[in-house]
Length: 456
Image (tube, rainbow, N blue to C red; front, top):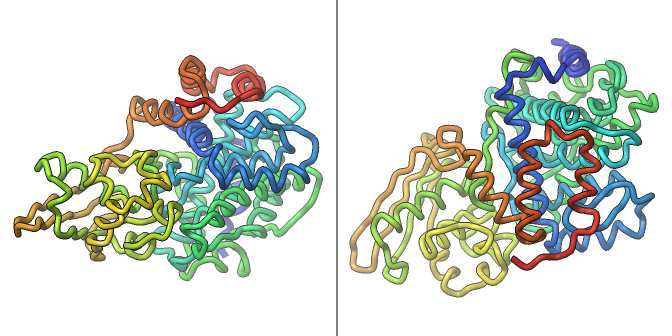
């Protein structure tokens, strides 16, 4: 048996912020910037409000802020709710090799600890812990979902990986020793869960939220000496063996310290499942280049990566939640409005008969040779003419990444739903300078302790 847990933990405990490459440190800041923006964009959604109303009565001491809502609850509950806000629009980041979404849970856990830990957490400590949490979540995803590893398509990769990443992020911030970090990872593995049956429903957001809560609890328990298996990742009945066939435990420590999976993160330009982005991007381009009138469209055909068909082939989504994971919906609004943003993720847009009529004329074809970031779209008009667009790399892919300026625009669009313009700009600046912050908890209280709804 290849031992991976202990070497991984030894690296995590000994890791120093100053030893991380500058590019990696900046990517950690980008991940934080994107995650906080998604929390602001999603915090006032019904899903989060109902979860808060349910959990608030059972909350412990008011230790940490529910971002964007001006409410304080215990740290595990805050971590759960803020992660749900991050996930609600499917606008979060993606590890493209595995379709995991690693940053939201670790960010939420660290925000909660920065307010409740009993001492000041510097921005440098915060970013360092976040980078390690993301790195481990991505590596755990590689163990079970990146070739040659293979897990069931119904497994929610982010659910079973984010719980481990969140435990590591919390453990690093709490300065756990090697034994405690092994236990934290083991306790997190024990609680790893998530299946895709709930996709397109409110229940799907529980997966990320519970991963954050369980990850934080794993680190807190480990700090108290609550032990677990010594080989939770590679053991014969451990994470790798149970969740994948075949699995690749070696991916957990492959080039550890010299290769960083965080550099393979993609940030979403559209609030939908990542597999829908090539279709939306290509349809916007095709509509603009040919000045298409959607009323003249007879049918639309998208040749896509097979995962798009497996996860998002929803020609007739019943509501807004299903539209968020419908490839047909995002292609339709892209052709109709030449955009695919938050306005196209509303219930009003989801139930618009014009949108529904176009969705019904869009079909998908799985192509095993089509890269995940690519697509070919063919639009046939009622007069028989055809327009075709092949997109080799969609925006947000590793070949066409979102720039810092792109992330700023995305942040403003979400934060303005909650904060007035001057606070949006102040917070945006603070996000880019988070590593220099003397006290992250104080920053959170400054911006969010009395947040009220703002109409942009």
